[in-house]
Image (cartoon, rainbow, N blue to C red; front, side, top):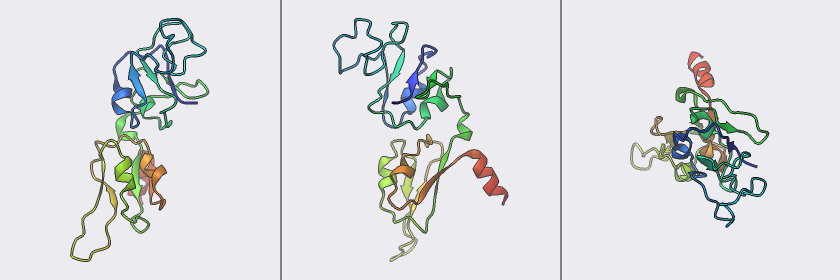
Length: 173
C-alpha cells in the first residue's frame, strides 16, 4: 500500500512538486484502466476516484510511492493519509529531516547524489593532489525535501536522516 490523498485536497500542488519519485499527479486518469469515466472506487489502481465517486484533485500512484512522507509534510490541508487511513500532519520545512553523513564510512561512490532528485547532495572535492578524504555532503539544505532516499540507498550505511530536534540536541553537546 501507499499513502493516499483525501478529498480535503485543495489542489495547491505542493505534494506533486516535491515528491522525489514523481508519484503524485493532478487530474489523474489511471493508465491501467479504461473505465475512468465510470465510477469504480474499489478497483481504481491509481486511487484517482474518491470514495464519493468524485475525481481527486491529486492522487498518489501506489506503484511509485516510496512512503517517504514528503507529500504529507508539505500538504497545506493535511489531506494525506497513511496506509491505515490516519491523517499525516503538515510539518514546517525547518523541521523536516536532513541527511547526516558519516565521512569515515563514505566511499564517495555517488549513489546518494544520483538518487537525490532534488539535487541537494554533492561529493566534496579533493583538497590536494592525492587527497582521498572525499565524501558526500548536503550541498544545498534548501533543496533537500527530507525523503531519505539517500540514506536508504547508501551501500556503506554512511547516511542517516536526522530531524530538527536531533540536530538541536547534537548542536548543544
